Image 1 (tube, rainbow, N blue to C red):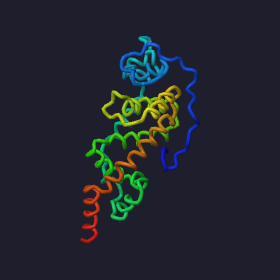
Image 2 (cartoon, rainbow, N blue to C red):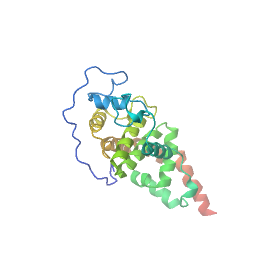
Image 3 (cartoon, one colour):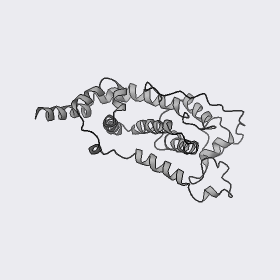
Image 4 (cartoon, one colour):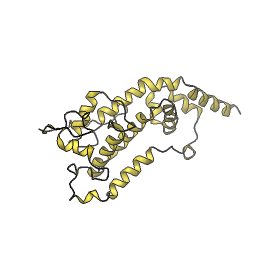
Length: 227
């Protein structure tokens, strides 16, 4: 996991001696120095397989998505839906108070993430948490094909400058991602995930702790305990 949450570190990715792009295709000017395979990957049709970067007409994957890719898209879509808190253990005042101790306690709590996400929506930064959660799911994946497809989907959803859900990453993190995309793995977004974790911890978390949303939650639980 990227952050204090004891995530295992992966070995550095080897970008190899990739050929630099000579004529940059449309919509790729923000990708930096990436080889032609990577550029093709991000500009391939949405129904192409992950690494059919040439998008040749003979590729059979242009006609229909694989069942595995459909499952990836479904999983990511489900992760973005609101969680039904009725299916979780009853929230207690004690647990809510622990969220104020550290950001780690908040984000490791299923209900904590639900309430924190509602707060992030009010700040129009919900994509930070969703990106972090998508990376957490990626870190648990072991199937190589599923990893490659998930990496591509996360890039399109949260890293691409064309995405409405693009997260705020510095140029170094983006360069690391672009290199890692040459050999996608469950560690492709490690540095970016850690950067977003620290951003939420430093900026969003203190504001949530001082928000009326958090105060109202505590007050409502206190009233329940008193009744």
